[in-house]
Image (cartoon, rainbow, N blue to C red; front, side):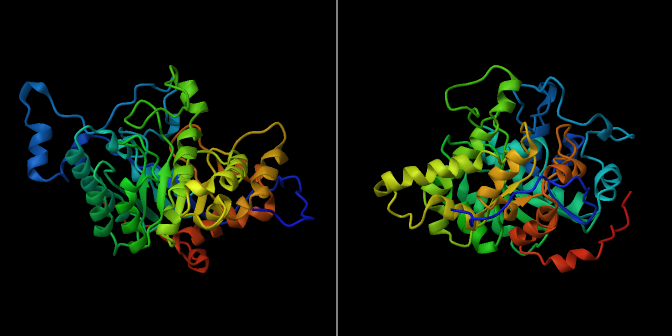
Length: 388
């Protein structure tokens, strides 16, 4: 994919962006297991709670490499107690209202790792319960909130049924994949039933970064790591693997209307990866005869990328030049990663990206991804009356 000649990259403007915002990665959470247990079917509630002195079965998979600073901003803990991201009034005050957010896509907290459970049947029950909890406890609170659809990727056919269950709900806007139970890239044919359902229902597929101590294989190409520091540096490797897998296995040839968004994996690496991808395709295309175009062309038509974390280069224009070289000003969508402490604030991004990109990154590109009309978002949506 070659950019037109003669284009000049100007130094990113220092003016702050103050317009409407679509936030594509907001982690909502529950404070206690009891919140989700209420949504489990009777048999699975007994499985979790009826264990006598043995205690309850944990609903989330634990991370084996803890972040030494924790994951959350210190000010996001609700005053009345509970976990960051679990209290709607706090989120509304700190994020939705202060930044003029017109739509925010909820991406769950630790429950997003349910594909890390060894019991695939339990994982799918948790996915169903988590989706119902998200609809009932969050989407009813504020019309600006949209939700991802969690699926248990251990059983792709069951996951496909869960996607179709939400087909008619326009506020369940995407299918989210995080942990990888099989060790294959997400383009592998074993996962294709989910993509058939996603294309059929018009829901993009989102792959969220997060390889670490869960069932998802380590985010490294050469072996396991020993510190969270290493994990965080290498975070994009898992996303890169899944992206190459999607294109190499011909997912976009098989499902030509499918859209993919890569969340929390960075973006500056995309140019060099696609350059290499195109080069290798020219020499090895006989191994993937189902591909009709260059890998970069599939990317340009089907893939979007969230801004967070935007890489910090010695010079601001370094990152901008890389992104522009692949036309990513039309593919970046804003994400705050609230309530995590390493989020990218709007003020920060405004100074790192050219002013002429702002409207696209903060609104227009997300509208193209999710099939929304930007004109509809110009009228601020007012939250419904808060429930007690």
